[in-house]
Length: 282
Ligand code: ZN
Image 1 (spheres, rainbow, N blue to C red):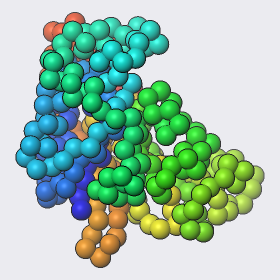
Image 2 (image 1 turned 30 degrees about the vertical axis):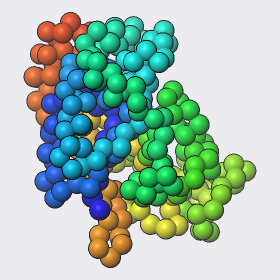
Image 3 (image 1 turned 180 degrees about the vertical axis):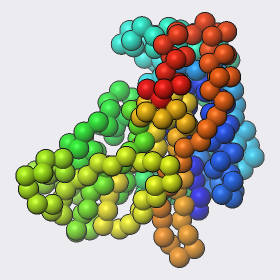
Image 4 (image 1 turned 120 degrees about the horizontal axis):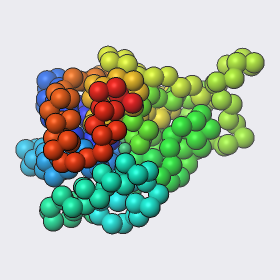
């Protein structure tokens, strides 16, 4: 089993295309899991959806959930809560979508998990958090712990923050239910580590994390189309299962032609701050 885990493509077809090429360089993919925000910000929303549809047509199923920008693009949520640049980009995206793209985005569910789709293995897929898949951010140890307590699978995959990182919980018992009273965060250091401590670590290119029994993970692949963790390269995760049953997540960073994307954004009249941030990864 080999699967690319991608998120926050944001209409950046050039980055998505390089990511798919990179993932396929390891061999054929059994699936692509996409954690939402396929559109919004970038200049090629229709091309991004079409690329995912073509992967599926060519034999790589794509399992995708909706992000807030996908919902805004189809009018299911208001852009009133977006900042001015995001709202301007959303209005442009709405005006650009084809009917076919809109139907695809409108059909995306808010969550998927391996209890109903066995190909998703031990993972729950959401854009934000299991508690609020569209809006909430996976931005603290407490939210990560509560998420693991809430889901019906051992592991959770999220996007939305545009930062490649993972929370890990060394759980000495089985993968049974967690209780919020058990939570001890790993970021204050005035206590000894214990079996219920959750830790946060960044993914960097090539970082490989074992998906082992006894460890529960909340992993964020980072953003394909608009990274915000200080690196401008497109970010994703490769999930692999070896024949002897070892499972791992490998972080990948992939260069793409940022100049071309910025030029297309200028031609589309998209906000200059959104154009500039691609170069800085912020
Ligand atoms: Zn996003």
